[in-house]
Length: 340
Ligand code: TYM
Image 1: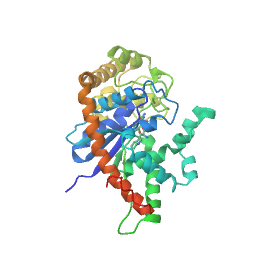
Image 2: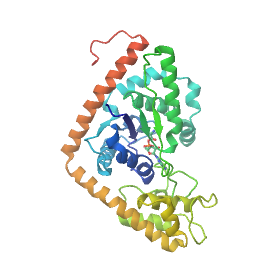
Image 3: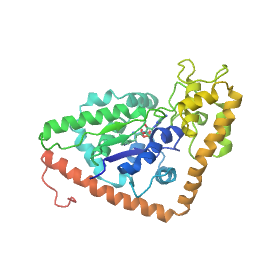
Image 4: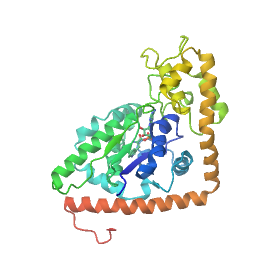
């Protein structure tokens, strides 16, 4: 029996942080043997806000290398670059033409990012979720493992599928597969180190708000030393008046691979002076093997290029089959040059 299919991706915008890792990539790694996985570096999404053309290519390679360093195994998973598979842009256009504008204007992430852009909001930023839907639907993905912040985009993807199938499919032959989000219980929303009510984010101006996967030990130590806490003694989870405490305990739980109950017990009597060095040591130890593997992967650039090329070829084959199916359903004249 064929394994269910997974698709997910990360944007090559700056460095990956603990939110990206604990909310998404670690789940990909943990479950990969149960699925047929496609993981893309979504470089087309990275240009929906002003970007630096000098660093885009290198950032794309960095993310691909980090996927491998975090434990993505090519035996189970395909790694590829979104812009190298032209079907992503093409399907996005077809989906654009059936997606009502007001569905996109409602998207929370669009509104948040648009506020930051002021006058310079691009059409691409508004269209971001349609391209994301194309990413997912091209692979007939059954499940999409993401952090909590992507839930609304997944709901939109499902709405687009229902609309396309309704307009252009038959009941016994839907055009597109309906995917489901896979959002983990703990770690799906890692919060900023500077403010426990705000999401940890690559676009936060303060470097002190996040721990990046490639931060050296002394930087991790500094960030945890300076992170926001409160004057209480004793540490516990789930107190709405102590968002930083909940977030830091959750980070410790996930990075030390313990249960919430065990951590609640271990830390119940601790003060911050005792907890912070413990979290620092745990974060450094958890990231050390990823950083070591990342160094090895980058040292063999040729091999990384080969992995990406092989991934692109495999992804392209699958994606073009779906694109052909959608083109047919929409009634286009068949393109004799299109791979079938
Ligand atoms: P990106 O690069 O912004 O985020 C990558 C993944 O990290 C998760 N994430 C978090 N999880 C927990 N806590 C946080 N503070 C945190 N910040 C980010 C995101 O939810 C995401 O899973 N739109 C996607 C990229 C994308 C994609 C796709 C994902 C494009 N096409 C198709 C899945 C399927 C994004 O948010 O990238």
